[in-house]
Amino acid sequence: MAGKNGVTTDVNELKDELKQAIDKAAVEAEDVATVVAADVARELRQKADDVRKGMVRTLNDSALKLREQAREDPADVDAQKKADEIAKQIERAASYLSTHSVDDIRKDAEETVKKNSTLILAVVLIVGVIIGLLMRNGDRDCSAW
Image (cartoon, rainbow, N blue to C red):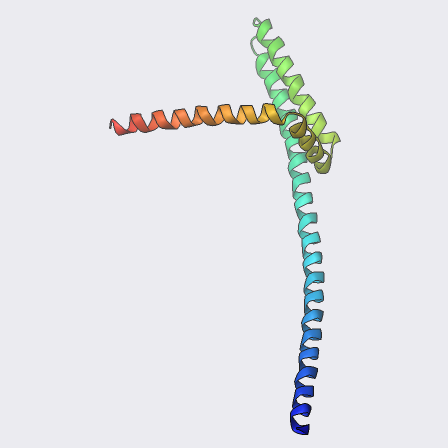
């Protein structure tokens, strides 16, 4: 019987050591995952910020080109006024993007969705129905061929 108890004790000690090794490996893996997740989040934030900055330049360039093209025909004053109004809105969007961080924009978007969720759902539903009807009509047109 002493032999069995010695083997049982050895097996239990091995189980304990194995459990400790597994627990240690799990903690180390969790630490590595946390570091990797933080690195990925930082990189994504940086890329989003780069895209935001690029969009600011693109919007400002678009507003400038819109005004330039509208002024090519000096006789069409009404078109110039409309182009200026549209360019101002584009510049407002560029200004918003340049003065807000990606996190600020995300928070604003979340608030807007919360405030206007019913309207957003209605618009999405209507757009979905229209797309569905267009696709359905497209299938009918294709079946005639």
